[in-house]
Image (cartoon, rainbow over all chains, first blue to last red; front, side):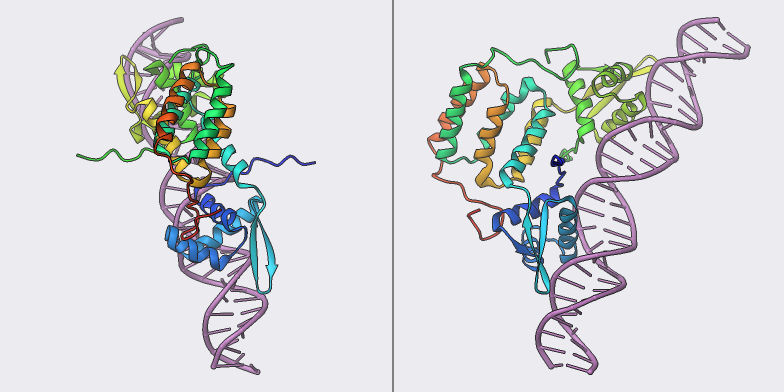
Length: 143
Length: 143
DNA sequence: TTATATAGTTTACATCCGTAAACGTCAAAA
DNA sequence: TTTTGACGTTTACGGATGTAAACTATATAA
């Protein structure tokens, strides 16, 4: 079976996906209305993005009378996880801890989110190394 | 005073910045050597990226005999924080908690990193809301 | 039936990005 | 002094992106 090639969803396309994920399905007119309000985009812009997402295989269109209804073909959480992991993979590994701390300090998290994070951290602490090396320059382990 | 316009550092440029941040300063030949090994880039490619980063104001070049030595003009940690915050700002706020948990599960963190995160989380727990709304579609608070 | 609105498709277009080659200069080697 | 490199600058070039107008087909209102 063909392995799902990493689909590259651009920033603008991401906004369209968010709406689709949240609503489950949308018509282009609905999407146009939402994006006009949320992003200030013209209908034509939304059409282009929907088309590109179809071509990339992130959305699926199902004919519904005169128009199409669009559905996501990839799941939201895995897509988010992948985007985040890709970014963190490009950062100095020695600094991801500090970066995460800074981030958590600014995000709004629910009680449940915090509890879940605490659980994962407690588990990780059992086997965590004393320090993490910098991996920015081959052969250099200190920033 | 001119406000520092958000500098957009691309993926390839980011790799150059990482090396510069770690070494503090580099000559183009050093950088070319490092990037040849690390990324498989030709010297010409490295020159282009150094030039673009100079133009963007992320690097500064100081004449040193025949050649230049390059220095970063932006700090690493703030740049990392900004990149991460920008990404998280594009994600469904209702799901950032889960995304963070998934991420932390995969990252390698030091004992100190974990301790610091635990401290920040404990503090946040004091005022955290019961839940966080979805913000993907205006007027809709549930995914 | 004919005009109109609407949905999708095609074309546009400047800019950014990844990836370099080509070119011009100046210093060091021969 | 002439040749050869090393270094920076200019040019290249296809593809992605943001942003949208133009065009086409069709369903619906008149």
